[in-house]
Image (tube, rainbow, N blue to C red; front, side, top):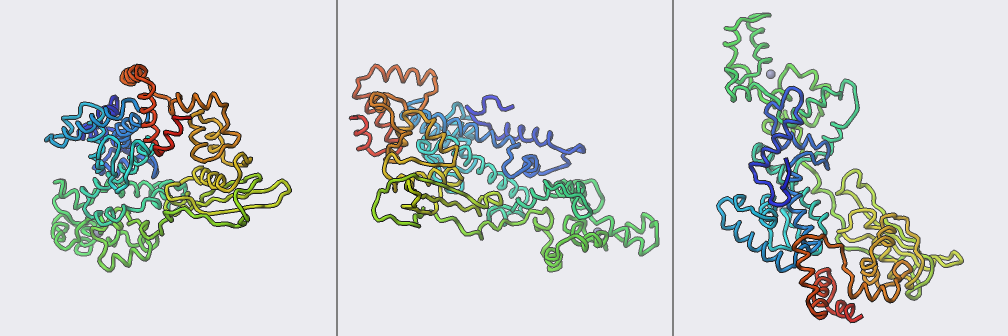
Length: 496
Ligand SMILES: [Zn+2]
């Protein structure tokens, strides 16, 4: 179903077929029964991070493939720039851009545009939420992650089109799905919450409820009035077992059978409602807020994320024990941590600390602070703590780090990368001390990353080998420059 989509992207009609097939496969035994496609696939995801929807792969494959091609330099930068510029020009002039998708660049541009991203050139894009990403600086994993977040927003925008009542909550950042997932995953089994109510919630969320009004619109029923209320009125008129005439006579007096009436107004459900429904929602309906409100009708409540104070974008550094002069020498203990991420990523907070201890057990320096905004996980905070430690202690000081990903990254990294870390950190501890020959080889001849062998990259490598050493050095310098080094650093490295 998804063969080749990483190369030329997935056209909207094919994507719709893929998504319908996935929705059909995930439907209950009785069938989809008119479920809203996006909400049905969200439920099929099974969690806030699930990716059962084919839309995730349909977008992440072409975008991730292009990001990998740029990151691993499958082609020279000029070639990548040229084919991306050509694709941008061709697609912007085309009546139907998807008819012009004939290669990875066009697939990348068309896929990113569908998500609302703006592609500036082969190396830079702005996502639909305004985040600027650079393909030469941000690794492919960052692009795939940003793409998955974008697909979730794209789905909510689709929901908004078919369900205009959700427009207000979607424009304010989307509904709050955390309590919904908690309720759906719960194993509670009593009168208040049980497998039947969980199924009912799924059904209401995905628009699988067929009210009298919806059936009337589809041409199945003669009228759109609530059948329970209609029977009650006819019984009041004629007693038990009313005739068809009595039912017909009562039709104009019966209320319209829609979701709001079924959930919040129908007297037939008043006992259950008074026992189980929250007081605030009953009060809101009594004020006339229920009809057309996605919170009351579909359990889609507005998110309150915009009320949560944002993390500080700036890193901080605070001395706990300030040494009289820097750098100090001793054993360095570093730590980074994160709390409350399991509740929600938006309320997560990170911190780091460094303690330098001398041989006699005396603390000679200690500092703490928060990492910058772009660090979002524990290994990142740990790495930031190590970096802060290197600013305090003498080069060559022993470190005690309790983060395995950081230790592995430092000890198992390739020689070139270890050197890059060493140069970046501005220090030379025992982990970063290769022999002089190896260092010279690494600086002048090593490749920073393993290059994937393709015909194009082979041709480029052969061409590169035939050039003079000065030209090769310029290419290497350019590649390092793109990795964030200054020209002076590159010259120093090349000279070394
Ligand atoms: Zn009713």
